[in-house]
Image (cartoon, rainbow over the protein chains, first blue to last red):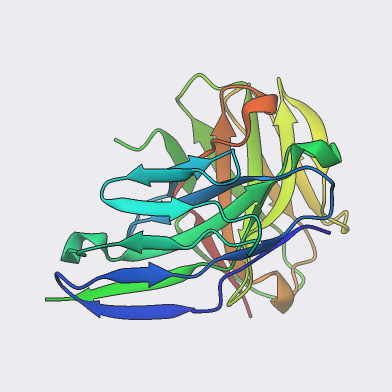
Length: 116
Length: 114
């Protein structure tokens, strides 16, 4: 079945430094899945950060960017300069509607800690 | 103010007991869902409901039973609890079932089964 892999469970970065959180996916249908990043701030529910539904396109929100790379089956999240307020858990996800399912498939999440 | 309320935030239960996790959404959405995340595992889809009807069930065990008394409520009853049921349970909603790509989540109920 479809799956999403986030290899880092925890990432620690100093404030104002750059960030990359890795995400790779596997989709079994012949179509291309829609790709998402969700974020969960402490004490809150997950919320959509950005989404990209077309291969080769880039999504951006709140200074974060992610590019849909169908050759590498990757959707890495990047930010040029992180802030303490970015500390949260980041989840990569996909939906593969061509397979007939409308479900969101999530990765295990990456806990980002930004040090002052 | 949170628009999706989950109660309680933390729950400790003994093996073999039964618990109900509460979820209410005030977004006016027609579809609601349950997800679960165990330690170091992906967030896992459990159920989806649309207009109070079950649309999709990916939970193998009948010990997990959603209950929808109103359109904006989707509680989760768990019977004969096991330590493996320990996880954070997230309720979510979307305007319509087919738009579930953009989900709105509650803060979760963290269940520990001893």
